[in-house]
Image (cartoon, rainbow, N blue to C red; front, side, top):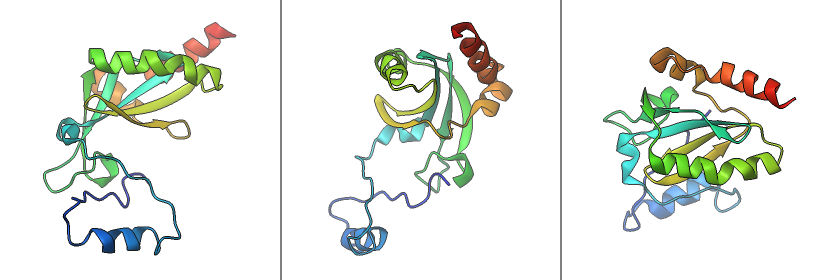
Length: 149
């Protein structure tokens, strides 16, 4: 499940070593770390890319006041947003590469100006986008695939 074992750790945090020991099983398990992006307060945007083309609406998953995680299961709220020009540039930059690798459907996550994740196994958020904005990502997916075959 997404959003588990996400920590915000400052380099001066006296618990940092203990946290890393715990989440790496004393250095035996690989982890992923990224720089904290303060724009998470405005949401972790899920943007769907179908056959190299981005949808027009993103699902912004906005953390609640008690958490830093932009994950609906972990208590974030979802709201739809138009793509910013930066979001569109990110999509246009990676769309062709996804196609080259045979990835016809992906959900990318963007925080602020940064691409933080590319999901190809479970790009969720389609129902929330349709419910909140009316944009039907699943129809776009099937129509686009049918037009390519």
